[in-house]
Amino acid sequence: MTEKIGMGRRDFFKGMSLIAGGATFGLTVKTGHALGANGIEPAGAEALDYPVQDLSAKISRPVTVAVMGAGARGGTYARYAERYPEAMKVVAVADTNPQRRKAMAEKYGVAKNRCYGDFHEMLAAGRIADAMIIALPDDLHFEPAMEAMAQGYDLLLEKPMAQTEQECLDLLKRQRETGAIVGVCHVLRYAPYFRALKSAVDDGLAGEVVSVQHMEPIEYAHMAHSYVRGNWHSAKATTPIILAKSCHDLDIIKWLLGKRCEAVSAEGSLAHFRPENAPDGAPARCTDGCPHEATCPYSAIDIYTRRRKHMHVFDLPKDCTREEVLEKLRTTDYGRCVYRCDNDQCDHYVANLRFAGGVTAAFSMEAFTPWGGRRTRIMGTRGFIEGDGTKFTVYDFRSGSQRVWAKKVSEIAEYKGSGHGGGDLALVRDFLKAVDAHDESMLSSSLAASVESHVMGFACERSRLSGRKEPVPTACG
Ligand SMILES: NC(=O)c1ccc[n+]([C@@H]2O[C@H](COP(=O)([O-])OP(=O)(O)OC[C@H]3O[C@@H](n4cnc5c(N)ncnc54)[C@H](O)[C@@H]3O)[C@@H](O)[C@H]2O)c1
Image 1 (cartoon, protein in one colour):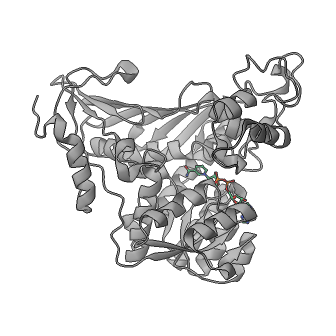
Image 2: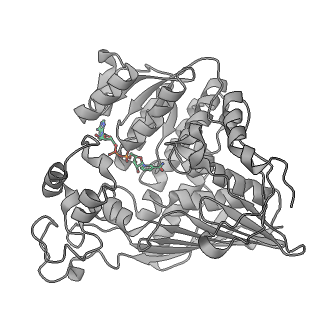
Image 3: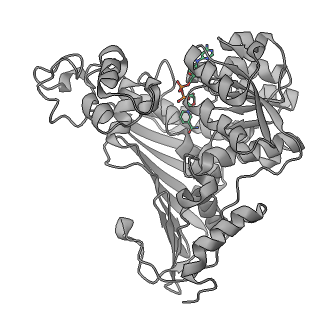
């Protein structure tokens, strides 16, 4: 084992690299440490040194941004302007929710005449910023994206970019006609963990990749919150869960392999969250005196008032009382019994994917897990890589060596609060750079790259419904 930087100095150097601005957070530390989780990492593994880039865009002027949708995602991306005002300025906001609209306007000093309700009002004002962030609900991406590109905007566009394959292709056509810089919010591509994993694959640490296993464990309470009670409970109103949730995963698998996906075969269903599975006597809401409240894993009272998870949807102050939360459970969908929610999203979904050259991937989306965090196994001709979303181990067959990438991104001050393993703000950084330089190649998740993985999702859904293997059309021609 070698150690270039003593363990006691690691935190010091992390801090130094932030101050240095242009520096990366990479440390070449080769030392033994038992990481434990998954039981896969050996004590005595060497550390892999793929660096973590800092979050500053380092551009010479602030890119002005109009935000459509001041909810969870719009608020997340806008936060970049708070941290790096020299690189981004929020100059307009549209949201039908007056509380959210006002909060964003006040936070970023948006002029009154640049605050809009419905997104159409903002579009009617013409081009009022360099770029637009579209963080509206899934069914409101296509129309404003098409119109904004026509008006000359560059776009940061939430996924899924549209609700049908044809609309995705129309967006690509419009982007090519207008030359707009469009970044699709496939945030995982920007997370330091996935960037390091991609580098390990591209550097051939496992040899030629032959197959991949990738699992997205949604986590049972997150499933209940978002895909049973919440915004994405209806595949028809939004998109099927393979797009609404797992377009990230299809995108990551395709990106890691760097090959075209040729055919897919998928299965899946809504097994559990159905009326016939409601326990005897369960009322419409957990707050209606349900006799199973004390033992049901999906109790809204437990998830929201005791564990206080996913609280942002209520627009309540951080120090809200239990009674205030209970009132939300009595009056919004978040208090409904999970067996009586008019939901139709699959709670388990598997897909086999065939890529060019016969490379295969097996994907599995699972609602019933105690934790989230994507798990990936990469099988190559010379080695094997296994990761859990925060750290990965590379096994080399011939030498028997085992190397670990395990940089603690969440502990890097600059990355605190940047969700998706740091990917959220790193995406904004790269988007601003691409807009500033008018160079799409500075963005990993360009529209063209993202259409490819969306098309895979639509093919999976066709396969799941038809029971047949489906070819994946060439999206980008
Ligand atoms: N990239 C990711 O990892 C990721 C994660 C979660 C959600 N998403 C996607 O981001 C999008 C937004 O999700 P969210 O969680 O922020 O939802 P959200 O409900 O928190 O925010 C959406 C906002 O749009 C506003 N809105 C609705 N209709 C409007 C209209 N006609 N005009 C103006 N404003 C309107 C709502 O009031 C709300 O504040 C969705 O498409 C979702 O699928 C992406």
